[in-house]
Image 1 (cartoon, rainbow, N blue to C red):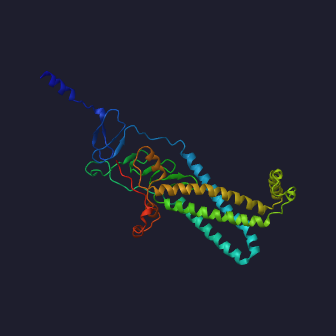
Image 2: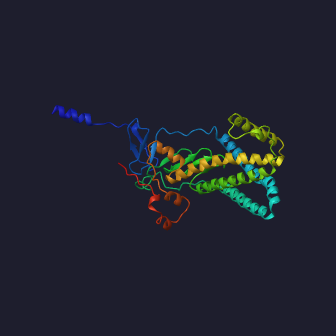
Image 3: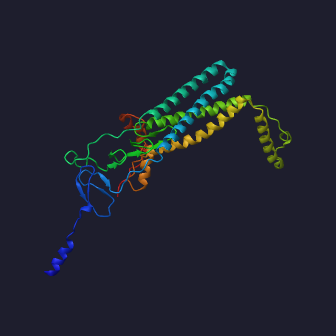
Length: 342
């Protein structure tokens, strides 16, 4: 009898008030282990971080100034490409044919208006505001109504699992992908389509600038003068390296004789090639995230152990607003096999 009483005494646990924390979602008091910084409410499903604190805003002013500078640089570059390209390229195009000049001038106008319009929509449109949901009191908050919600210390309101707070914009953004300083705005649920369309428009426009600037600069490039290339004989390997050097020296020597229009064309060609590489990498990365059914920030949290989304080409069609009846007729080989949980 004594041993059984001792065993019963060991089963008794004393819970102090220090281990009770009110749930921010429903207001109920939660019992948790003393060393548990993060815990979940069994009623509403809200997640509470007991030691989460609000960070300071020391760099808030600097982030805003950085975004404004990036936006001004991007706008200036776009205007330079449009105005400088028209000034440098189209005298050469119109000298070939008037119809050819009007045709390419129309294409330039369409690409310029489309790019500027998409940039404006992406930069000025709200990235996505999370929906308002009732919280704070037990009778009003239903069971599992705040499942996996967290509390934003900056906005002082609930934050859904796919919502993130941007410290540069100072708001919570639904399905936030990232904050882009070149548009001075976040990329979220409301403007993600505009951002992808803007990248596609920039990529097509830079490809067009590359082709037209290369075509125009070839027509106004000064004639090349060679010193050793005329004496180069096929199969003579000793003069091969000298011939390459001769071509490089001839290009540099003739480039010095280029006019201002020619130098602008060379700059447009080099800058458009560089921009195409960067935009292509960014666009491919964005399309891969959309294909996987996630965003850049959600992919980072997935590395921490969260559940991965389903990879499916239908995610791309849904993202771009393709209607559901069309999705039903997609070939089955476009869909990757579903992953089953163990």
